[in-house]
Length: 108
Ligand SMILES: [Zn+2]
Image 1 (cartoon, protein in one colour):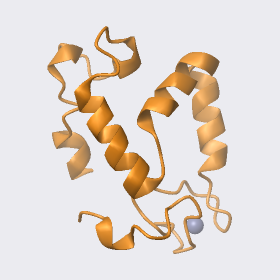
Image 2 (cartoon, rainbow, N blue to C red; image 1 turned 60 degrees about the vertical axis):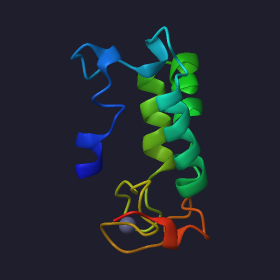
Image 3 (tube, helix red, strand yellow; image 1 turned 90 degrees about the vertical axis):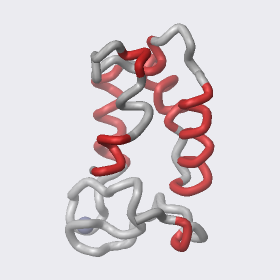
Image 4 (tube, rainbow, N blue to C red; image 1 turned 60 degrees about the horizontal axis):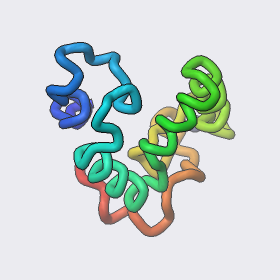
């Protein structure tokens, strides 16, 4: 959570104080900020924020959230998995989406 509050995406001046504005609605999308973040997320967590934003635009925010809520359900306890963790924060079951070789790369 700490990372989220200091994240350069959340505090991006292009949002003009509107935290809810999506990067993909910005005229500078995809800017260097999001490209850098994307690179980190793809290598560390196996997830692409840019692809997710494109999918949001393609299928709509509500459908996107529904799809993701299904995808990220822990197969053991049904709680949502965290993209930043290799195990379910609720029951400790393995997060199958977490890249196997990036355990030592997580910044704590
Ligand atoms: Zn679980």
